[in-house]
Image 1 (cartoon, rainbow, N blue to C red):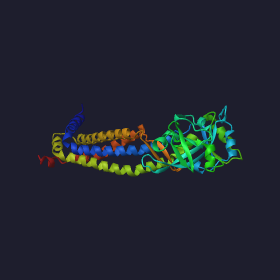
Image 2: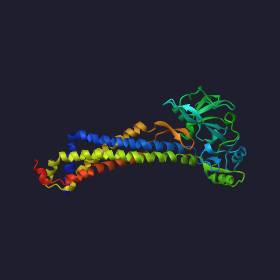
Image 3: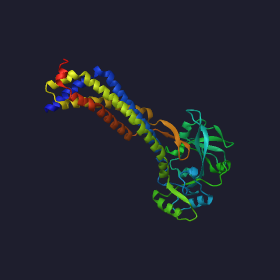
Length: 395
């Protein structure tokens, strides 16, 4: 074994064996990094979870048609004639009941949150019978479908978990009408699970709607999208915007995702700075407490490089312990944790689950190594430059 490697091994082993003597400062440094990594991962898991929920809504063979220039269903309007033309366009899947196309309306109703008891905006969607075939992942998890022409609703399981009063059999009052919850549904973890659905034929007169806000249709295949879009956009009778549902909902997640990442860029560097200063203080104290030991080793012929490596190794070890513990805490505490937030495109609540992904864990580990490296670098150089003669006089 080369002499320098022997020296590094010897000094590093000595440092690690004496960690117990400095357990107070070492624990504080590791805990500081634990908190930073846990908060960093938890914060970004909000954006990841929301983005996954929005991106999982729809599939490449499902399309949404809005009025031209509209960026959400809230600002859109589609006439009855336009809805008929859209359902008859080339590429739309047909079943025994007709085109697999649902012209829909979208209103906001007040439902109290379970966590606070305060009212929140929840989407009430009026759908046509084909809506259940348009959404390929739709299935009831409890109860039954609403009856045609009846003031009945079915509730997405995400909404049922986040908001009170949405249990089967419960009755709610919106727009001077009483509605009964008769079923709970799942749609593959998509945005639809944050909504309440009813018969659009009932919703329209209650909310004085004569037309629709969007048309959702299922195509024969994902490859039929271009022909479908070209046929509609070339029709002079129509002023519409055509998107794949998956693309439309993924684009709606951009504003919140950007906001969370901006907050992360503001908050996390401040916390990282605090953790780095904690690590610096710990390692400077460690070097000061071992100044005689380091001087003795230098007098015995140990080089400055092994001293630097030993201090950095100790700093990286403390950071890794704290970082791994912080990542584990964030994963078990937040992964799958359900919450609701505002969708700024529709001004309604969206229920979603935090997602601690492998990418976030990797980002947390990289941040851990960076904090450990920066926290140990300056103390390591100080140890390497420690005057041997001055330190030996203290013996």
